[in-house]
Length: 213
Image (cartoon, one colour):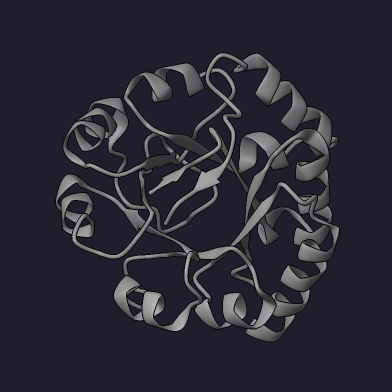
């Protein structure tokens, strides 16, 4: 089982160079960063992840979206899988021990099924309307998120439309962490926005990272 930092930052290539974005997220205080690149091929993603790992502070953890092979080749901390990606059980067989594995879920049934999988956390959402996915699933809202947190016995990461202003309502549902993309990356100074985000939510954000998976 793992204890996630409350801010789960995502360096999404749709907003620019993931390497530069990750550097700014680290500088702003993010200590768990997912690298997400739906634009480039696996070779470019591997180069980006390797560069991010070289500049990441020692207490930071880097997770790769979708690509188990990139995690394996780069030595990243883990992978985040979608519903149509490699099954989590297969990923667990391939990756080194103690690798972090998370899975996206979009409703209560999917979340409950994931409890039997060898994973460390589920992501639940979209909680609110999101602009980072053109094919986003229907929103689950705070009520749906609250029900998932009440029924699922593992860490839950909320995702989808989460902002500095609505994060408190999200954490009141019982989530362990909030995944944030546009509310960090759309600003010119990503590092400052990240620091402001953490400061604004200082009562709920940025708990220490530990892992016993």
